[in-house]
Image 1 (cartoon, rainbow, N blue to C red):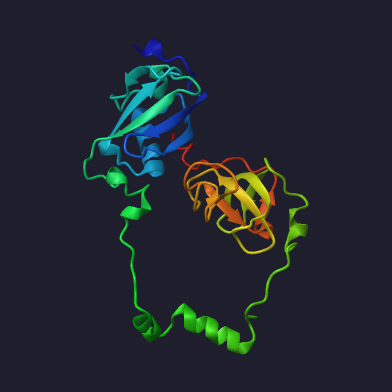
Image 2 (image 1 turned 135 degrees about the horizontal axis):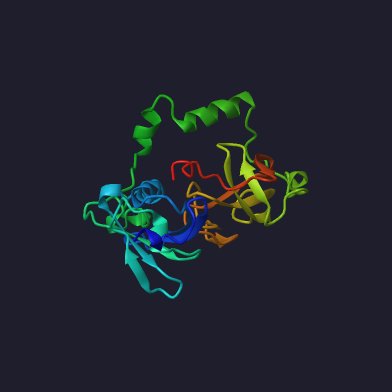
Length: 241
C-alpha cells in the first residue's frame, strides 16, 4: 500500500478547498506530500472553523469525480495521489456546528443590537460626545471636504497586480484596484485581495463593485497604508504540515 505515494515528501501540492455548509467558501491551500490527514484537518479548521473531530474530507479530481474519502487520519496526503487543482471537500458532521444554518454567511440572521438616543446620551464615554469635544477644540473641521486628488502621490508606485503588505497588522495580498472610490470619501484608495479571510467584503463596497474576490478577502484602504514589493503569501502552518 505504501507504494501508492506518488508525490515525494518534500514536494507540495495545491488543492482547492470547498465546504459542505459554507456555500461561498472556496480557497486554495498548499500542503506537503507527507502531511498526515490529521495534520491536514488541523490546518483546515483554522481556515473554516469546522473542528477536527467533526471533519470528514473527500478528494475530487479535475472533472469532479470523487477519488477517495480521506478517512484514515494516520495516512499521508500523498498516499491518495492528489494533483495540483484537485478539490478537497470538507464535510462538517456536527449538526450544531458554527458553520451550519448560514450564520457565517448571511448577516441578516444576526440579531442587531440597538440602543435609544436617550440611553446612548447617558453613556459617559460615547463617541458622539468625543467628536463634539474635538470639534469644540478645533481638532475636527466640520463640513470640510477632502480634495479629489487626496493622497494621489502615494499611488505613483502602486499598480494592479502588485503583491503588497498593509502596515496595520501586516496583512498581505494582491492589489486589485487603484483610484477614486465614488461610494467612499474623496481622494485615492487601494483595493486589496487578501491572502486570508481577514477583510471586510468581496470587493463590493456600499453597492459599488471595485474588484472581485472571495468573501471576507477584500479590503479598501488609503494608499499610504500600502507597501508593494516581494511579499509572498504567508502560511505560518506550513512548518507544522
